[in-house]
Image (cartoon, rainbow, N blue to C red; front, side, top):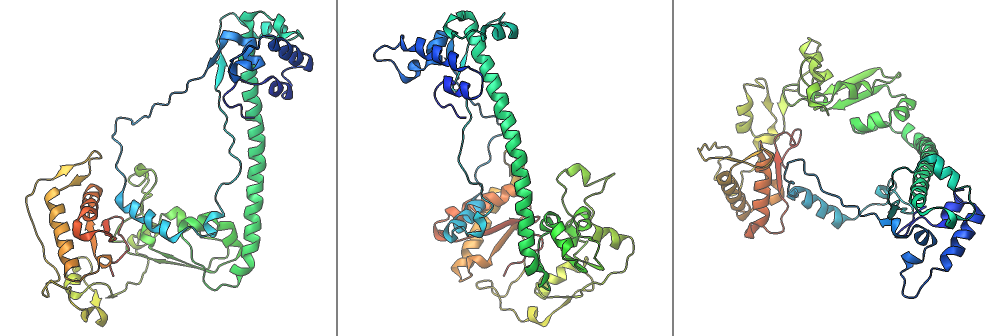
Length: 406
């Protein structure tokens, strides 16, 4: 249906039933007498000859809307991840869901001038004439615009029909994949997935009739996502998390607080309402010196022997924790996120010192509270002459929730 770089052709309009065979013959016959040397392909078109100067090219000018904000510069950490993905290539499994097929552009490269007084009744009366050249010139542009509107409606109708067929085909493919996966999954004792996957594949999971569902990081999981996992066969729901850390995030921030409180997970709500729960009292992540800092929050936490025997950090002389305070002025970027240039220089210099003393860069994690500061640190690290080609882990505290540095 694409009509690229030319007006709607007579043959195309005939195929859609907008022109009769006699009208097409008259149009082409009359246009042939107008052909002259050195004319462009556009001017040789019978419709173009028929419309004459009333045929105008559509000049689409797209103006980028920034809504008053400056565009954010590319995220360097995202660029690093894309580089790693490019090196690793794309697996065949990842290509299954890619869109494929023929690209069909639908564009109006030409239209006709609009004149007042051209009514639908006049157009209908004019199109009864088999000789289109007998139609007055002041009606031709209105007839062409009528053709354009009819073609758009026909395309829209066809697309809607194909969209319905596509939706049915997608559902059939989905069911077919589930039927193919069911025998394999039914033999598995443990099936792992994200909470999004649980909601997405809930019918498949329900058909497997699981009796136990365990949700990790349950304090950050919204109650609706857990409710999706409460299938009919469920006998035991295990929630694992820490209600003293970060809560979950709603797509609409206003729903997280009063009066909706959708940001409170089922895990936190059950704990706050006195439901019995068990707490781990032995940790295997932090050295004792760091664990003691958290005593006001986790007063009964104990250390596993493995964290007491860790080697010291190269170049630190046995100093594992220290606090540094300053009065350096901070700035804000275009997105009102804070950053401090002096802090950035100090952190980058310390990072370089650790690497110089033999600490692998992949085992160093820099945490900051502001995304603007994260970007500034990551940018400076990437441009540091002694740190070229290294991969850096610079995270905000919120995004680092549940992770640990090796």
